[in-house]
Amino acid sequence: MNERRMIRISKYLARHLRHDPQRIGLTLDEAGWADVGELLRAAAAHGFPITAAELREVVEVNDKRRFVIEGGRIRASQGHTVPVDLGLPVMEPPDALYHGTVGRFVAAIKDEGLRPMNRHHVHLSPDRQTATRVGARRGVPVVLVVAAGAMHADGHVFLRSENGVWLVDRVPPGYLRFPS
Ligand code: HQG
Image (cartoon, rainbow, N blue to C red):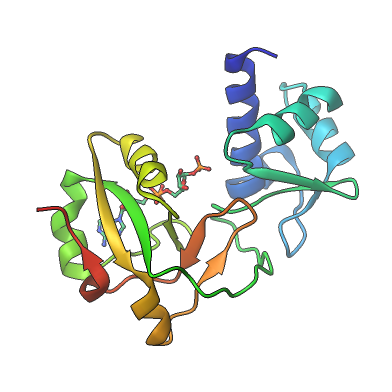
């Protein structure tokens, strides 16, 4: 499959497995799973036919491992706006995690800390390079360092998604280091 088709399918899956399953009449269970056959039928019925082989390829090859297939079901590993309980394990984070953003948000973040905005959690990256890519989706990236170890010691709960993204309810400004 070519890169363009792969990206189109990945975006289509993200839209319907994270944000808007009703749009194609799909139902997710409480943990975010959809039946693979049902998904393929719903996509075809709504003008976006995907073959089973294409679906498998997107799930397996996708650089960020955004989706998982298990026992005939598929779900997004993170990033939902619909209410789901992914049942992710609570984990002790490393001392430092990273958040990629852009300059125009920095003043508000200094003031309020990081907030989940439309998602369920604030998303943090395990390394600077990943955070740089996340920030670059919106402009010139600005990478913030999060004192995750200190937050954990102070009782903040961290989850880790199946694809290695760290999730937390919020990051108060005192735990953030901004580039000078
Ligand atoms: C910013 C993609 C103002 C925050 C990525 C970010 C990631 C604030 C934006 C995943 C703020 C929210 C998540 C505050 C946070 N005031 N702005 N108090 N607190 N922000 O997309 O972290 O491709 O919801 O800095 O790669 O950018 O979808 O979060 O810029 O892993 O798989 O508000 O989404 O993965 O944006 O990205 P998002 P994010 P996928």
